[in-house]
Each structure stands twice: as structure tokens, then as C-alpha cells.
Image (tube, rainbow, N blue to C red):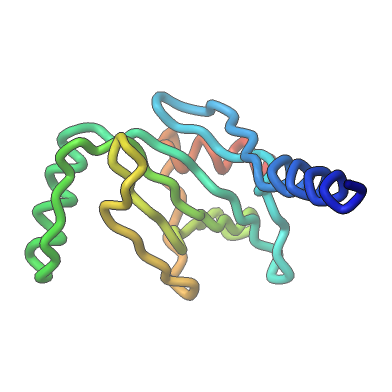
Length: 135
């Protein structure tokens, strides 16, 4: 009985540790405040959840089909992506992401850990998050 109690405690602890703390920062965009990390290269890494517009998912589907991927964004639900920011250089990049259907099924996923940094565009979604994380 003691082993079962210990196992239940560990399962609850793990679930709480893995739980995201989504904080709204822009229309249909949230960042996980529990995932914010300062990396050894002085970059900040964070997970972002977004609900992309129909125009964006249609363009994304079209672009993916151009490179030979048969992907459908019918019943698209949301996307979760990992961003990295350089506060000193005012740059950012997306290093990983997954798009999900409303039922949680994965539509598309990518992981590019060494993607080049790009300038943060002022007053954009990325610019808003830069202001939150870097100021």
C-alpha cells in the first residue's frame, strides 16, 4: 500500500512539473511562463501557443505541398512552437514547432535547433514577446 501511495505522489508531482502556465500576450497567442529559460549563450528560450488564422494555415499548407509534403490543415486547432530570443542583438528564431488538429492529432512538426536568428520586427507578435522577455 505504501508503494502505491508513493507512486501516486510521484505521478501527481510529474504532472504538476510538466503543466504549462500559458500567459496571454497578444491576440490568440500565449507563452508558457514556466518554460522561460536563459541559455548559456545569453539567449532566452520559451514555448508559445498560437491559434493561426485561416489565411496563414492555407498559405502554410500550400508552401508545404510545394516541397512535397502532403499536409492538410482541415480541422486545425493550434500550434506550439519553441522560440529563442537574443535580447542584446534584438533577434529571434523558431527552433521547433508542432501544429495540431482540434482533436490533438499532429498535423505537422519540425525541429531545427541551429536555425539562423532574424531581426525582431517591432509591433509584431514576436516584438511583443521580445518586450516581455527582454525588458
